[in-house]
Image 1: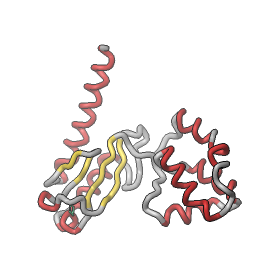
Image 2 (image 1 turned 135 degrees about the horizontal axis):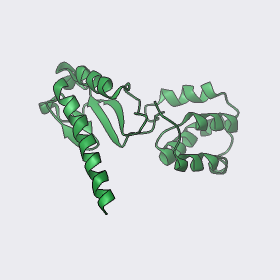
Image 3 (image 1 turned 45 degrees about the vertical axis):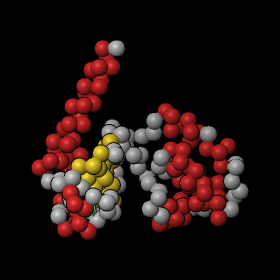
Image 4 (image 1 turned 135 degrees about the vertical axis):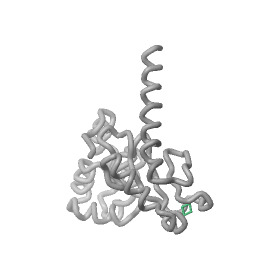
Length: 173
Ligand code: FES
């Protein structure tokens, strides 16, 4: 659902050949290279996968194969409001997957994706340590406990309202 790269990302990707020059052209360098890119861009865009494959003389599917094996790599930019839905045992038992589905339906993206305006991304996570208030979802760093499907829409709406308020205040300045 990503609409494309930001100007800043484009600039970093254009500069990628010189960043890669710090790494030797060995297959063993693949993970450190992917880590460097994720540290810089916060995710691995497809354009970069192609550049890395070319640099290490691998196919793009080789690079994807390795990158998807590790949970640390993401392929979509994180949203400004990253939503994490806990699917640890306690949250799962209390319907965490229904909460996840509701977020997916309301935002029209799947888990692991980001909305095209980059406002929201959805991820599933393991126990976040607040089982007493399961099921739990996090928006950014804020924990929302005792989640219910009916609360999902309100949460998203609140974020939209706060954003509009911020924008109005910025315009006044
Ligand atoms: S299982 Fe969700 S907070 Fe522990």
